Each structure stands twice: as structure tokens, then as C-alpha cells.
Amino acid sequence: MARKLDRQTLDELGIDAALAQANKSRREGGIPIGSALMDPTGTIVALGHNLRVQTGDPTAHAEVVCMRNAGRRRDWRFLTLYSTLSPCVMCTGTTLLHRVPRVVIGENSTFVGGEELFAAHGVELVNLNDQRCVALMKAFIESSPDLWQEDIGDPEA
Amino acid sequence: MARKLDRQTLDELGIDAALAQANKSRREGGIPIGSALMDPTGTIVALGHNLRVQTGDPTAHAEVVCMRNAGRRRDWRFLTLYSTLSPCVMCTGTTLLHRVPRVVIGENSTFVGGEELFAAHGVELVNLNDQRCVALMKAFIESSPDLWQEDIGDPEA
Image 1 (spheres, rainbow over the protein chains, first blue to last red):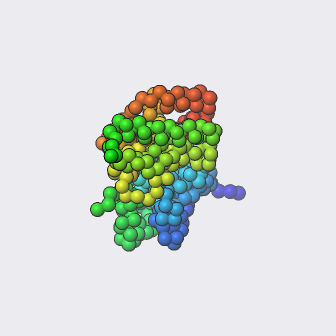
Image 2: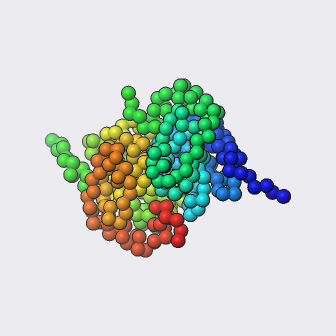
Image 3: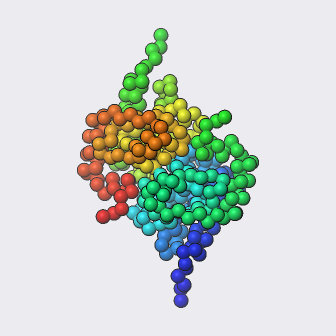
């Protein structure tokens, strides 16, 4: 008989899927941030990772790519968005446009995005404080500070 | 001798370029919203229009497509974004991420996007109240209400 997984287990599966995307991007020489979208049954309906280096698209943050890959649909309000990192203001806005009600992040110790905006719109934000995600981002920011600044819109020095 | 065009003339050229994109999308059977990015010399550096119908990408609002087409660059803070319609919260967030300081819109009588968010972040918003843009959106919303609801993330009825 199939077992129904609890939310904590589903969230672990979701962040693992997002982290696998981040690691894929790192191996490609890209920015190591990944995302996943999960429906209420625990099915991953879309994956994505940052594509700035790979395709030259400045809007291709992991969360945007994941929602792009999710395609045209009307069930956003039943989905959970997973991301290895706290979503920036663009990705927060994209989440709000689609009315995704729940966001689970790997960490926000290396970067804090639009978390106040999520709160103001009643989006549930869960921080798993996943040390694998922290280590991946710390290593990237240390090795590629200029690329990281570009990705978060910091003007050049 | 070359004449330096004043801001009002540049804004008219910018919104004309955005409107041409919107009309192109309409002729393709797509959602008729268009955008343009202009640098301080009056050069259009990127164009874009909504691509939801054309490519099935739910993140492909005109402003996002325009910034995607602008590519990797570090001069966002010197650009002006033109859009035929008040940018939604996703497009507002994308503008804020890139720190584009000035947004000129055709109209906000058929839809009001993240204008308060722009104000909170000090982005200058200019509404040209262009009746060509109003007429185009009114005709689209009347003929395709479901597609329009989908594009702005309204849950299905």
C-alpha cells in the first residue's frame, strides 16, 4: 500500500531536487542556484537552474527558469516552490504573479531576497537552513564575486 | 549638426517602439503588450513583447522578454524601460533587480501593476496615458478575457 509522505519529507525531497539543479549548473560552469516546483501529491512538476552563464539571459534566475519550464497552467496556487537560495525581488515578484502560496528555501545566510514582500502578501516562507546549500553558495561567491554581483544587479564598482 | 532630443520626444519614441511590439504580438495572435529599453542617448537597446501564446512561456511578459533580449550588461542603471501597460509585480521585480531607475508606461487604466513597489524603491514612473495603448488593451481584454486572466495570474473561476 502506498504511504502518504509527510510535509517534512516532501520538503526534503523538494530541496534535494533544487540542489541537484544547482550542482548541475555548477558543473556546467554556471551560477549554482536551483529550483523545483512540487504539486500537493509530491510530484515535481518542473525544475530549473540559473542560466545566466549558459545562455546569457539576465532574467534566467533558477526560480524564473523553473516557472518557465512549468509552462502555461492554472494550478499555481496549489504548488510549492523550492529554491536553494532566498529568491531575489524578481523571483519573488514572479512567484507573487503566479500566486504560488508556499516557498521553501535552502538558506538565506549568503543572500536575503524579497522575503518582506512574501510576508506582505501572505506567502508562507520556510527556511531549511541547509548547510549543503550554504557551502555551495559560499564557495561560488568567493570564487566568482563579479559574476555574483552581476547576477543580483549590483552596479559595477 | 545633430540635434539633442528632449526627454518628451525621447519618451514618445520609446512608447512608439513599445507599441509597435504590442501590435506585432497582436498580429501574431498573442497578448498585445510591448516594451523597449532606451539608453541616455536615445538609442533603443532592446525590444520585446509578450510571448505567452507564441512560446508557452508563462514568464514571458513584454518587460521580462525585453530585459532578456537586452542580454548581460552592467549599464541597467542608465536605461529607461518603456511599456505599453503598467508592469505587473513580476516585471516590477525584474526592473528592481536590475536597478532600472525610470519606467514610462502607456497606460494604467486597464490594469495597475506594482506601482507602489516602484515608488517604495524610488523608481520614477511616468504615465503617458496613451489612448492607442488603452484601446489596444481594452479590445484584447474584451475579446480574450480568459487568456488575460491567465496572464496576470488570476485563478480560474
